[in-house]
Structure formats: structure tokens, C-alpha cells
Length: 320
Image 1 (spheres, rainbow, N blue to C red):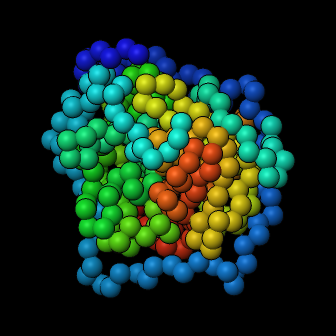
Image 2: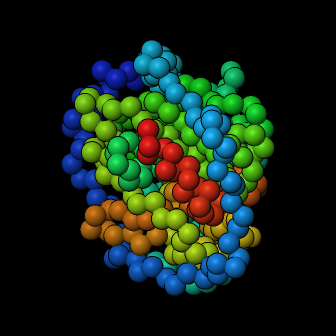
Image 3: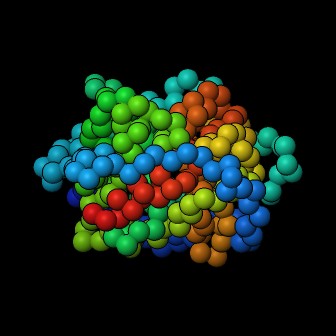
């Protein structure tokens, strides 16, 4: 492990960004476009959704002034990136048939997926986040518990997003947030059905992140059974991992995904279905989080179901 205290400021990574924009499609071993399976969710079993807040109620968002974002970049030296601890500390270290439990392998490319570094008090942590399509072309999706502790504890600080992060390197630069958003029900009571959060990013070098990397499409009410690939960061000093398997219904408000290797740090990892190897894009139907904040073991992961409450939060994020 190289633990070198080198400041990865915006000026440092700009040259790396300019030289690494080619080749953003997925590796040649990616399968052909995955066809969406029939969904199995009956309207009668739709999970309860949180009611819209009353008029005048402040949304559960936080804005970051420009001065704060510069400080966040300066804070994250290479040494701190490499020694940040995963957020899921309780975890242990072709389309498979139904019921199979495969093991994740290293992802050769994860352009739209990245490590989300953050501070919680005096501790440095990281999660996973990914770029999703939005009118502003500036949006990430992750787990709510990655950016807000819930139960009234408030938002994390000094967040930065590094797409395709590997071993302390930032090939597409370091991106800082302008807003963080979680649902009021998560902020107040850490409701597992609302463990989804959004991060609105500041432009970088005059461009928004979707202009640079592209984005996956967020899909709401996707049904419980989908063939997905899940990509995330189990350790801050290594590469992302990925795995394909079918989702199942854990409960009315939760999806379940079985695959070994998804240890701490993979919270917020996108669940992507209908992946098109030609464009390297797909449809996000969940993120690791929800029940047990994503799962208590490395072999089984969960996601809050993307229902109307999550759609309401997304609408708030893109409204600005």
C-alpha cells in the first residue's frame, strides 16, 4: 500500500482528467444488452410511502458554500484517501441461475461509479456513489446513511466524489457537492425504506459530471426481480468490484441481492439492469443500503425499493 501524503488539489488532477477521457465504454467482456425481465410487483403490495411535507417545511437538504468545497479538496490528501475506513464496518470480508450466490470480481472500468469520501466527526470514511441522469447533468445517487447519519444527527462533512477511483488516484478529477439530499423520514428517524440519498455536484472546469462521464438512468417502481450488475468499493486502497445476479423481494420496501465480496465501503453501490455494453449505460433500480444499512454480511446486500417517496426526493434534487 502506498500511503503518500500528496495533496490531490483541483490543479493537480486537471491534467489527469484531460488525458483520460477516451475509452469510457465498458470492458470488452461485458455481455450484450440485458433484456428487462417481467416485474413481479403487484400494486396491492406497494410499500407505504412517506407523505409530502406540509407547506413551509424545510426540505432535508444541505448546501455547501464555495469556500467549503475548496477546503474539502485540500483536506483529502492521498494518505487520507488510502487510509479512510469503510462505512459498513460490521461486514465480513454470465447471468447466474436463480438461487446461485456468485462472488464479485475486480471491475476493469467503473467510469460512472466512484468512491465518495467523507468525514464524520474526526473520522475519515468512504462509500460508493454513481452518476444518474438529470436535467442539470450534475447528480449522484448513493445511500442516505453515507451522507446523513439519520435520527437527527445531520449531514457528513468534507464530501468529495472521485469517479473510477483506484488506489489513491483520481483519473477523472475530484468533484465537490453543492447540495446533499435525504428524505425527511431518513433525517429524523433513519427509516430503512428511505435509505437513498442524492448529491448535486458543482461543475468542474466549466463542465458538469454527466457531460464528462455520461450517466445511467434512474428507474422507479422497477419490480422485485431484475438481473443486475452491482459495482462498488470494498476498500479505499484497491479497485472496485462488480457482480451480476438476480434481485429478489426481501420485504415490501426492500430488494435483496446475493453475491460474495461486498464488504464495507460498498454502501451506495448502484444496482444496474438492462446494461448496454455498446454505450456502457443501464438503468439503476437500487443502491446498497436500506435493511441493516445494506446488510450485515458480505454475501447478502439490500436496497430500499425505489418507490414514489424516492421519486419525490429525486424531483426535489433536480428542481434545484
